Length: 321
Image 1: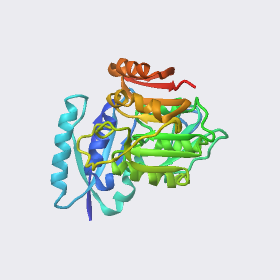
Image 2: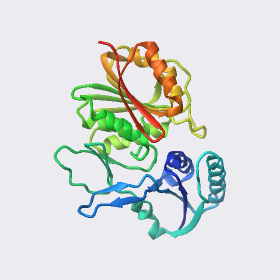
Image 3: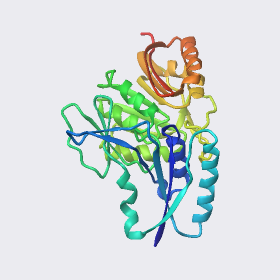
């Protein structure tokens, strides 16, 4: 059996969108992201070179459907290339015996913030005393810790107390934030996403991290507003997800979703949080920051932290006690 490896070189801001496109058509949604690194001269640690382009790969069975899938990918890349630098699609054949591990070669252990360490599920990591290790299967690329919005959320999570808390992860993606909350001491995490593939990925990653008893992954949204897919990917095949209404239920809400969705959900965030509860929001491009700030101020959420990375902004807000 033959396989096709499809790869493209993009800038860091296009990685998430290209990965979502590849996941729509790649075998089992598998996507590999190869970042440029700056190795340390004194240890195995390394830093990601965010100034250099990134290679994104996916794989197709070389069958009668491959040509159609490749055409869809090429069209999608053309559209994305109108907004961000996207290179030409490269295609090469790979034999069956080489395919099984080819995509895994491009993943490495990644440290984010002071404590979080993201480890691909097939790699070993010797944890330091205060490390919070997240073993993730990045078959679905979104939310693997690469994108600045995810990194900002994890960094803000390190600043608050999670012991014995009830947490909502809204737009859970691969489940990285939900699993992170469980590992920081949360007693119950509800992970919601409008994409059933994301719900499945979150459940699988919770199991990999032995957190399946703490994390419940469901298809759904918060409040009554009719919302599109959290990541804004119009190609996602979605049904009609359950809408959940919560009152004074969560100590912490984590929401790495589009700015326009944050604006709509201001009142729902406030209602779902317990008095004194914490809201961490990300996915906010700097051009939309003022909209989110105004929406949260209007409902009475108090800003306590703001962080940026590149063009992205993330916040911590608190509901008055």
